[in-house]
Length: 110
Image (cartoon, rainbow, N blue to C red):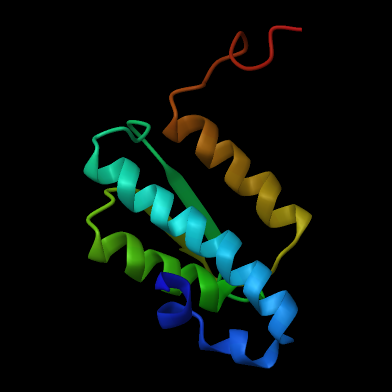
């Protein structure tokens, strides 16, 4: 399993929950790898995380996995942020810029 190689903390989860989690995450990582190999990925992907986020370790492992399969996505890390609204408020603006969604007329048409 790809995910087991990258997330050893799964050993601390009950067997039933670990099996479900491993299957779900493995499928996500496997699907990305398969789509990459088939040339069927979106042209741009953006990931951001605060360095104090409780998911930082998993993010780092995913970044390593993405580099191993040459996924070609953009990753950003920010000091002083956790898994919190002020971080998401900042990075949603960065993501909009990254995807070229700028100006007063950009975004939701409703």
